[in-house]
Amino acid sequence: MYRKLKRTWSFGYANYIPKFKETFPELSKVDGEELCERFIKLKMNFYYEEETPVKPWIRITLPFALISMIIMIICLPVCFLVTGKWSYPLGKKSIILNWFRSLRLI
Image 1 (cartoon, rainbow, N blue to C red):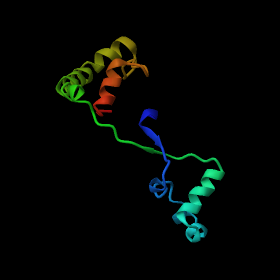
Image 2 (cartoon, rainbow, N blue to C red):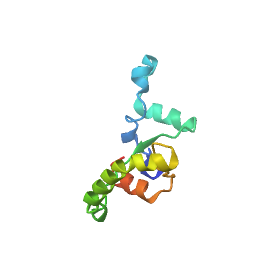
Image 3 (cartoon, rainbow, N blue to C red):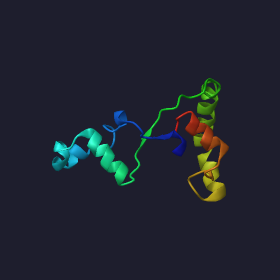
Image 4 (cartoon, one colour):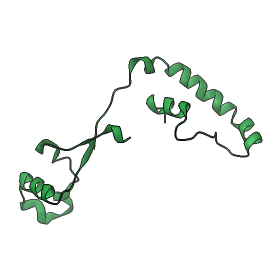
């Protein structure tokens, strides 16, 4: 997730920074550039999420991912009988979980 975040550097993204002017009516008199300068003096950093496109070779694997997801759902009762949990032991570094995330299925 952190690789999708980009730091706000320019005034153009200052309007994206949390809506302080709506939250704090006292700031409606403050200019946007002056507000940015105040944030810089306070050493506050803001980030926005940058959309990253899905790579074409990963998009080709979408039908296989859907089929494997259906098979995993069908086999879930068998996994419950073996492990006693209604989930698969997918760690944070699981290949299947990362594959589903890259296809934005999860």
